[in-house]
Image 1 (cartoon, rainbow, N blue to C red):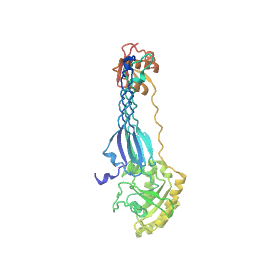
Image 2 (cartoon, rainbow, N blue to C red):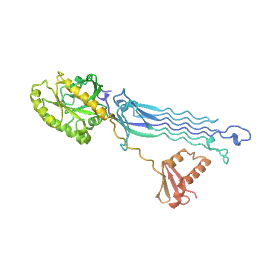
Image 3 (cartoon, rainbow, N blue to C red):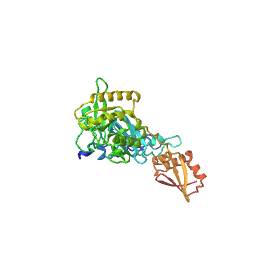
Image 4 (spheres, rainbow, N blue to C red):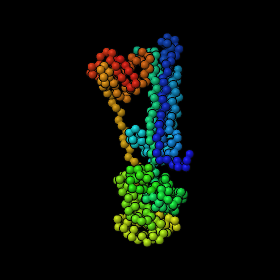
Length: 424
């Protein structure tokens, strides 16, 4: 694996829960009981697929090569009322801060923003009932059992949004990586050219006896970043969760205020609320003569716009203590005001109710999760099971709706992948 892929903040995976086991058709041998009496046991449920937030992980890189994740199937039922063995659930560990989305619709399903937070990504199928469950005073020897439900299967997009207290933003080559190294124990790669930082870096900082806080050095922003220019959207998603922003400027640059305006413009275009996140400015590279010359005017202009400004040299560590104190105080204040930063999750979509529709001459289709599941669980090779299915159709209202639409004997009725002949 190349060094460039050691960090990944987006991945697409397929999860498949275990299928439920089938119920058993079995009869015990007992005198004076028809065929010995039914004793077929139930099938067991399939295993679930669970996503769990692990604070020891920091990247989604493992999911780039491991795409398909399968849980265990439930065991089939057996004679003597034996129930099958439950399918093994699969636990997938992801970094804290992972947002789970449905791949097709893009709908957010879960936000695992706390250690050990979990989300059932795919539900195991229920086990089918054995023939002992269908014995009645009228039908004492049922010769059919239910099939198990298939496990849920879906494609998901995992998106990592870093949970940093402070985000270091700014144009390329402003010295964010050097500043992170000076404020924390982090050791990001640093070189003298633009876009040194290709991936976010994290470090933990502490001031005096205050609680520690996390600082993220984020890739530099350029004009058009909200449309994907430079590192674009790949960078901006990591800004969403930060409690405050430290805007790092090269005080020795040609026009630091213009660079400042470009970065804030891109933040607002990506997400308007980011312009409301508390922000202070770090005038960096005070070790250079030009920076020392421009610093007073820059500070006056920024503070006139309401932005606290701190002049520092990340290289020589000059001016870091006042900055660190201000960052710590700001984080503690924001933690008290906003104890939890989380992405709003859309409510789950409702299950489609029963619906019958004429789709062609002499052809009808029945929609509805309940009826499709009932057909999937039925052993269509068993006359007894099919007769029970027809009675269920009558009770659920399927037959009545077909009559209302003018269905005639011999017409085709489609339910899921199955095709039936309509009979009066």
